[in-house]
Length: 327
Image 1 (cartoon, helix red, strand yellow):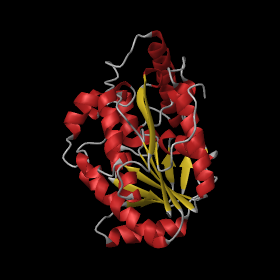
Image 2 (cartoon, helix red, strand yellow; image 1 turned 180 degrees about the vertical axis):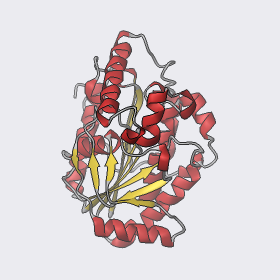
Image 3 (cartoon, one colour; image 1 turned 90 degrees about the vertical axis):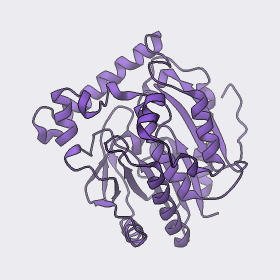
């Protein structure tokens, strides 16, 4: 098989929690297993579908999808700063193929990404620049919200190109599952003037510098870690839906990405939080991988990790590893 799939939640608090969630050892064990599988697979290039938390994308010009031809990761909490090793010629060919297939992604020759991209690259491969990468941004949080069916179709197009290239391609979907980080990243109508200014234009908005934004981001998340560890905020406040999350993982493992075509963003947010919209990345990545199966070729783990602030899931195309509960 020339393709490998890894869908994973990302969370700043996965690295900076105040208290370890029950079962964290198993999560870490599976993450180590994925990393070993990736090393064995030895990808020639990695495609990462990710979102952004206003570190590099702003309302002033918010593309639905964007392919990075050069990218820098910012030093946000839970992220890993540095320059991504972009395979620009392959990214160019991919973009041309997408446009020939009825998609018109924007491109960036100076893309800024945050922990949504850098965390999975670091944790699953050991470094954000270990392998050549093509980052694909999906606008999950900006109304009018994208239909899930469109991200599925985009992923299918990416997969056709990847398979035709004949290269070993690792496909990562980074985001979700259920969580509600609206306190950190409020929608337009709920944002303070300072936050809305930065969300709209970044530092050019004049009310917050990049350092201000990253500092506020860190302070709020560290405070959130304390409130989660103390029990002040729990699953209800985080809109965590373990049963829904497990069902999503099962559907994606079985190759049923179309199950989500008719889901409405407003309903998803009301039930499972703003952060569940990051499901776009899992859908696109799994659609790109595209191997029809009954789930038997997939391995997954899930933890409703309040201490991380997210229903934390990991799904990958590899046989189950031998991991003990004490891992």
